[in-house]
Image (cartoon, rainbow, N blue to C red):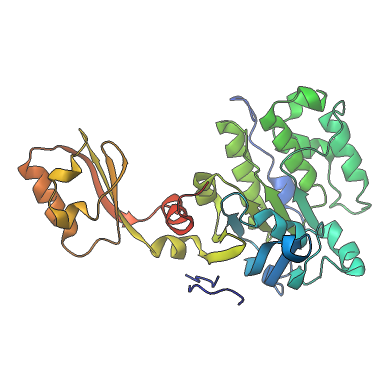
Length: 345
């Protein structure tokens, strides 16, 4: 590894309400990734620089992580953390200054490897890439035509459009689609080749509740058939719902990498909700020093010493303060993220 902090593996420094259920069987029936390739993405000591000399910027500084077949790996971090630059190298869209990257065992920077990799890799960009007057069914049909397959695994454009819940909007020009509908069309385009690895950039951005359910179902169907999914997002609650593994970036380095459960277990948290706000100055110092106010009436305690929760419960009872919730357990992914990155967006 090329960083300097320690590890859980800590590393050194939309569909309308009446939309049909997506036809995830269209994905599930496709080919399975070879189990001999457990890691669909392997990044080791990656460095990405912009500019030269003293004015140059090191956007990615010795990053190492893996993403596995049949799992969702969430790549998280504040703005400017190096996530996008790293993923663009994996996609073959950006050159690296140092380190190695393998996707499905191939090097995306090598022309011959990239030629073999592209038919097996799906890429969903955050926005753009479609002509404003183009219609979803026509765009999907055109993309399907780029994959020359004569066998039964050839993708049906109508199935893809139906799967992402756009059948009723399939002849609507791109410019008239909502933000969530554009995201779902971009997802359909990423899945055209029945890929073995998929990179998704903010797939639920601007998508309504029903559309998010559709996208989650599609992602799960991909992993069920052995596809590796690399998900870049700022929506931590969404990442927590779908991810198996988590990689948290900050300032060009990986702060932590591991399974979702292991990352959350690294910090124990107590959540407290009261019927009225507490006056922290009134609390005994041995309690107040541990209590963090999220908002009036909502508090957290991280890595509390033994006996602290019991002492807090006694104090609340003695002072007649009713408790809505007092629960100890694993920290949420958002709690861990804020603790590691200093609460930067």
